[in-house]
Image 1 (cartoon, rainbow, N blue to C red):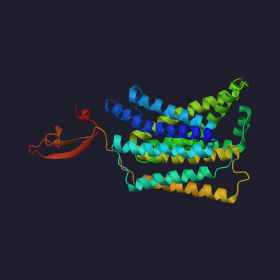
Image 2 (cartoon, rainbow, N blue to C red):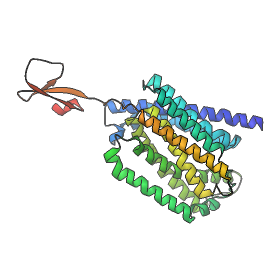
Image 3 (cartoon, rainbow, N blue to C red):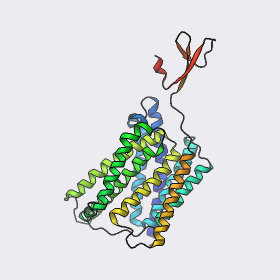
Image 4 (cartoon, rainbow, N blue to C red):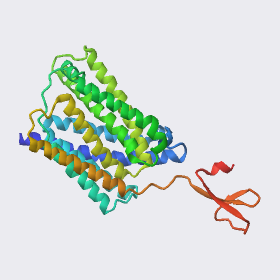
Length: 336
């Protein structure tokens, strides 16, 4: 048992290091892509031609695989809190690689996120044992979880259609909120697929069932949506802030979805529920501190020009005494 837990612990540590690094590598790729094309935050997809961005994706996939395998060797109470390691790795690398400064209050916010998430996991109830995809399907179509799914989709659509055009560039919770809400549905689908693969390898083929393919399509759709808006968040806001807020919100929504779908809290003691509530409040406090201390990224390709008396533009550093009005444009080719 000790050897098994040690293996799970090491895999979880490796997972946190890879996932935390992937945030930095992908953002470097996004920055390079924005030089010669539209930024991901305004709908550009030039990053798909950036090898560095793909390296970040591969790094994240390796980290997620390591995390998945860690759950095979060690209990969730050991593995899940170690996911917060990716926040620390991301913040440290962002400080040195991207020159994104994280002040003392930002560090406090990070610490609150980690402590709160750890409290939630340590007092979480035991997970139910599931033996088939059909069993998960029965849980997924119960009225309570259908209501959660409908509410999650409605909130996500509201954020995408109304909030993104108006507040996406200024409020970090828009992009990250979409990723987190959709992410909770991703985890439920991935869990069903994981059970299907495990049972199939044991000799009971689950891929004959339609439910398995429905869960697969839901997972693919949710993952694509998450990646799209996560790229927008990374391209718009400070990485050291995106990472912990995404972790905190994703953890909170996933716990909520799991509680509704699997009825995790049936039979829980009042003290355990109170401890988990305190953990959730701590996580939310951490995200608030991080958001309040966020330093906005400088605008890209901003060039200052003067408008001379004859209406002709010229660069700010040129001075000939002509009367002018000062304006700022995003790209130099506006005056071509």
